Length: 319
Image 1 (cartoon, rainbow, N blue to C red):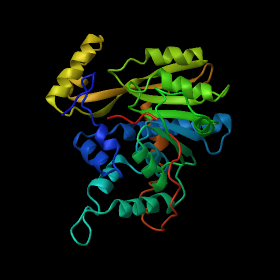
Image 2 (tube, rainbow, N blue to C red):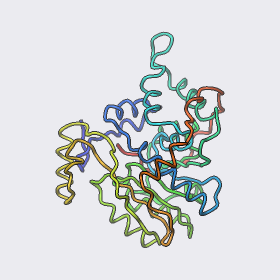
Image 3 (cartoon, rainbow, N blue to C red):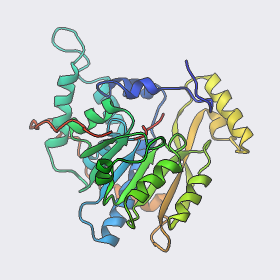
């Protein structure tokens, strides 16, 4: 088991497979759940943006999107439990006792994406460093376009700027900390005077202050939600010990949270200064989402045409 400089286990290998099965099999063992917890908050922010800015189909940039998990949850109203079952249990073996091929799995995911209209009218562009994950998310129909880039290292190319242009919202679940203010400000500056709204779920072990200060210079105001959100269980006692040491050195109290065995995240919402609407209480979110229909029930019907593979060069969604 390998660890990064912060003490967290390194799971880079699950982001570079031709399909999402390794991703879900490994993360299921750790009860990885933050995309599901983020879903109602992202949905509410998209709804508010649509109403305030009168944009019928907002364009969302998912930073560290991996295989397009947030896009699938938002657009088709599936759940993480349904995706775990889909990639870990269903059709695990073919007629001859062999595992379902990546091509057959991709065909099933195309049916999921194309058999019905999205529950939420939204267009999702994925940004990641993993070309394999981006290619799958795009071809499956979860992502509408992709940017394959490492903006910690490079400025966006002209083509990447075109893909970022007009993005209404930027979201992430777990990559900030690996992705820094360098990536976020490069994206925003590439859009000229346009300022997308943002919502980032950030592990508590990573300070958000440098990002908040950089965004403030670009005209943003940031609010941190009072709630904390479970990300996943620790992969081993060694990982927990190392992360707790990192948090102690940073002056972060882990009692009742990471000390109890779970990595936790905070939600930061950044919008142009003076924008009203936040915060929302958990009770209000529950009322707003309890009537939302499930889009997964009729997901295995009509086949869909393949999308073009990614041609461009994001930081990946981290564990």
